[in-house]
Image (tube, rainbow, N blue to C red; front, top):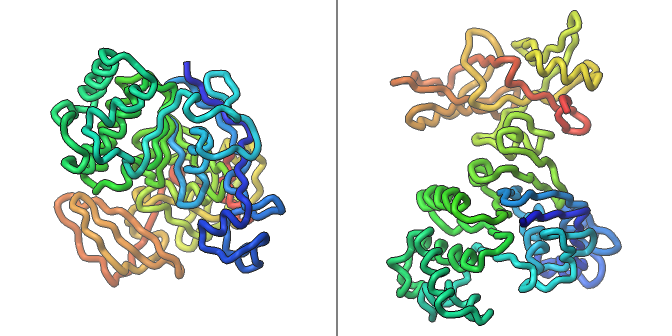
Length: 394
């Protein structure tokens, strides 16, 4: 069993320490300009990098922490690993409080972005190093290294030095070095960010296969939403030290909790329009210049359950859910990107940028410079509060 529980975890850096990392010229207090430009809360304690982070991770679950740079995801991972001191809250691994436990005694392993392989050691020696430190018998070391190498398909490289390997092969070695210890929890900090696009795709598939072969709990950090969507059982979307949403990848995509999540998850990102939520004959409609759409039944029920009043809202519709129509939202096409099976039309709608994905189906006309009209179904409309930016359905 390797359940991980985080209860109200906080991380506060002294202003001068955080300032050094960001290049600030500070002594004890941040200047007003620095306070304004930092997206993180600055208190008398210091800069709050992680705020009230609570999460229950089940045994053998694959959790992905995702968010933009500086959101606190890597800091959270490092607190779990014991590489950062926890400023507040409690961390439990396998039922034991870990706040004051040394990293080597937490029964975790970590894979870093930079691989962190010893250049003078062979692949075999790199993978065996942690076991040798623990004085594991040589026969057991050989067995575990060979098993891990077979799982990761690096058996042929065991006697090579890291410099003789490609980036993808080095990352496999780094993962192998972690899994030979059979850790309760495997932490991965943006392990694919140094690889090119093709290798990232291959390594994502390798990690999915690996997950099925070893019995451990995965906690994975990335800023790449594609990795988050394809790898995680659940994903934790973070911004400015706060959790924005915890849900399965599909739930986050289909039901974003707020405007930030809606814009962050999905490629291309969700289109946002100024609109009005109106109530006609007991039914909710969303109206924006050129179109009025009745919301789907399940959306009607959720809005009614929360007694949502008619109001000005932000309407979100994903590019793949917009369709060209004879009437609807009017926009002028500025750029047409041909993507093979589809075409991405970038357009101006009421002074805002919007994107619609149009299937080519063997051919598509040139819309650049033309005015087109967009429509959408009531099932795919997302309604956000102008004031709080929260999804009004939840």
